[in-house]
Image (cartoon, rainbow, N blue to C red):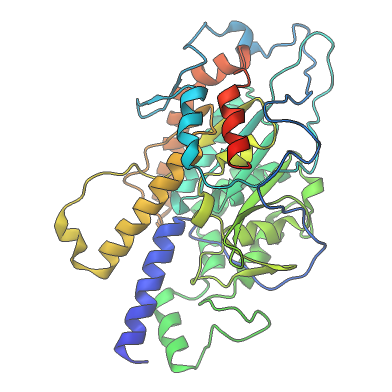
Length: 421
């Protein structure tokens, strides 16, 4: 393999890994299964509901309110959301104005309704959790889930992308946080994602002794993703677990290479969808599902807040694990990697800003010192702690919204209609 080809491969790998900013252990392989209900994020909700409609979900407590909500102080004005970084988040109307630049969003069809029993005294607001991609930084999702669980914050829907789809998919399926933590910290997840170190893989592929472009999956990629799909299936409650069997309704977001659109997969085998959402191209081969060819969803919706909003939930909590855009020295652009990395940062920053318009509460853990492709367990532990701290700071805003849910905003509805969301 000549130097030019090797340089091209290196540039592609650097750019794709930074743009996806996803899990250190994802993959995909060619598989067939029943047609998934992964529909293009356009049009009205499938149940005929209109933008802003509320879902009927109840609780059983005598007063109807969770203990934390009853005893919580008035807290901040529910119309104003404060990000954990200290930045003030805009009102729904202001978010709607910015949504004019938003990308198209896919319609979500929950695979199951909330299992909360009915109560004639009080209708609890429904909550959707949007978990973004971020590779090793996605360990922060565990810290957030831990805090929400400890404070009895209800979760009626989970929508995840890449590492958010991995953590969210396992959690929605009923896998304990402790077990997910073990997978991330002991290296088994990463090893399943890239069973052969990257450098030897590139060299062997170049001289043809171990071609990554052969096999049942005809699409290009250095890794087939088969070992990772098996890893996901093995660690679910059942290897062939379906979306309809999850304890919490769940959707995985992935990008279809054919039409360039992001889709929410909410039906069929869970492990396949989790693998598709985290297939970083050209590192991992795309995942063919029916007439679509899926890669990591981060290209279009790294933070799937719009997809979470489309569940019809009253409150959307978004967990953003990307680091904020900051100025960097000019010397960083003297290498291909530096330029590719910066381009990826810009793409993700723009995409995240658009998606944030659809969130009511934003949890933004400090992950600036955590490498996206970190291998040491220390970083996974640090990410989880960061998520825990950020979630605790966001609790007052979450409790305030549970006590006084945000009202449907006409401007938001108008923005959805304008962009056919």
